Structures are given as structure tokens and as C-alpha cells.
Length: 297
Image 1 (cartoon, one colour):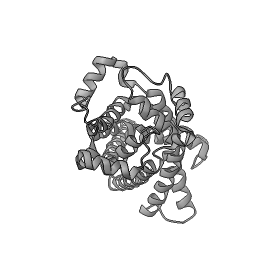
Image 2 (cartoon, rainbow, N blue to C red; image 1 turned 60 degrees about the horizontal axis):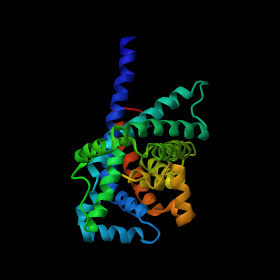
Image 3 (tube, one colour; image 1 turned 45 degrees about the horizontal axis):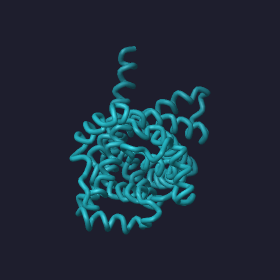
Image 4 (cartoon, helix red, strand yellow; image 1 turned 30 degrees about the vertical axis):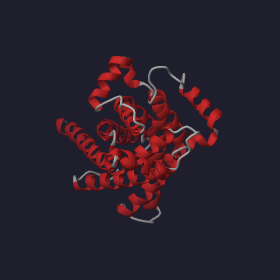
């Protein structure tokens, strides 16, 4: 009995470690696109820019290193966020399979994907806050202003000192909303798309199936989550006198002053990042699981 209990526990630990490694590789690879998206979302309508213009502006004013401003808290975030949501999704999926069926319906997968994302995001929200603040700091430096923080540790200290410990969870509600939507798209779509590709013999359980499924999951996650991502980014960058009372207030003001299209501001850089991120993560994760002797996701 002890052996039967130890095996699932060690398997879960292995999955957590492999998910962390794969996520860190994916995050580092695609981070320049993420910072471009964040800066673009922070631009008001009076300063229209394309993703390319924003990226070129970062390199011109801050150097290539500016494209990696905030990378360390982003990587730290994924040490918690990605393992919790992916392993949590698998655990919930297994728990939902109580009638002997081999696969859940898409709505059921979407629900457990969203729940897994919410739990993971609540845990990782402080690191996400630091990442957004440091990415916004780079824009201040490019304008000749003094940056607010010298690094992630300094950012944590200043946020706690000036905004209190609860300040680390500023923007947690729009963050959670976004996490629910993103993981509905990412986890549920990847799982369902891979099952569809393999079941219909379009490809076997290999890199081709993983690539097709990751492409579909990245697109669906971007379409669903972009409005919540814009709201989350704007609220998390606030300090001092607040412009928005709530995520709903931010949503209404964004639409009122900038139009409905503003909710999808940064859509293409978000998609351009989620697509490669999904590909790098899922292909790496599935391959590492195979090497470790673990079953496919």
C-alpha cells in the first residue's frame, strides 16, 4: 500500500519539475514579445503605435537588454504558476472521469482548465505584479525618468512598504479573470485538439500532434483572454492615486475613451507570443515526460 501511495506522489513531483523547466525555457524564449505587448497595452489612444514600432523603440532607447526587463520575476512566476495549473488540470481531469469514460467533454475540460488557472494565478500574482511594474519601468527610463525599482527584490520591498502586504495582490481579480479565460483556451483546447488529432489519425502522439494542438490552443486563448489581459495590465501598473476603482471600471473607461477595439490592443503580439510559447512549452514538456517515462499529457 505504501508503495502504491509513493508512486503517484513521486510522479506528481516529476511532473511539477518538468513543467517548471519547460515553462522557463518557453518564457525566456518569448519574453521580448511579452514586453512589447505590455508596453503596447499601456499606450493611450493619443499615442498609437504598432507592435513593431514599440519593439524598435525599446531597442533604440534601452538596448537589446531592454527587451528582457522583468524577466527574472517572470521566470520566478512560472516556477509556481505553470506547474500548479498543468498538474492541477491533470488531477482534476482524472477526478472528473468517474464513469469509466476515456475523455471529458470540451465544456468540462474548459471548466477544470479555468479552475486550475485561477488557483495557480492567486499563488503567482505577486511575481506577476513585479514583472508588470518592471516592464513599465523600462518605458519610464526611455522617457528620461527615474525608474521606480532597481530589481525584483527592491520592487517587492517597496511595494510592501508603500502599499502593504496586500499590495502584492493588486490587480488579482482581473488577473484571476484572465487566468480563468487563458487556461480555458490553453489547457482545454490543447487537450481536446491533441485528442482530436490523434483520434482521427491526423498524426500519432508525437511532435506533429503537439505542434498542431499548441497552435490551436494559443489562438483560442488569445481571442478569449485579450480583453482581461488589457484590464489586468493597466490595473497592476497603478500606484498612488488610482485611476480605476475596479476591473469593471477599467473595462468601461477603456471602452468609453478608447473604443471597443482597445480591449484587443496588443492582440497580435499576444498571439505572436502565445503561439511560440505554447509550442516551446508543450513540445518540451511532452518530450521531457517521454524521457522520464511518464505518460503523455
